[in-house]
Length: 79
Image (cartoon, rainbow, N blue to C red; front, top):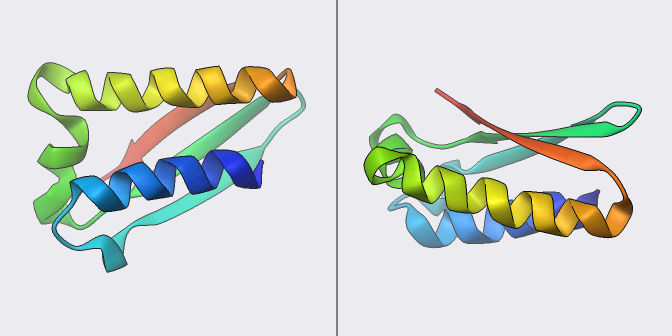
């Protein structure tokens, strides 16, 4: 599951103004992994994007990567 965290962290750090504030944690369940993304409050809009498009793209990337592990992954963006 380290790959899932690394991919989300890499993309998020490229999007935000303060890459040092990006924190990604993964909570593993039986068949589901919850990836939590925390960014600086000023960068929250950049990660979510207009109409949630960037967040949707991150979730799509995460689900495609998690298919490799035969698990379901969910992205939670923390405020």
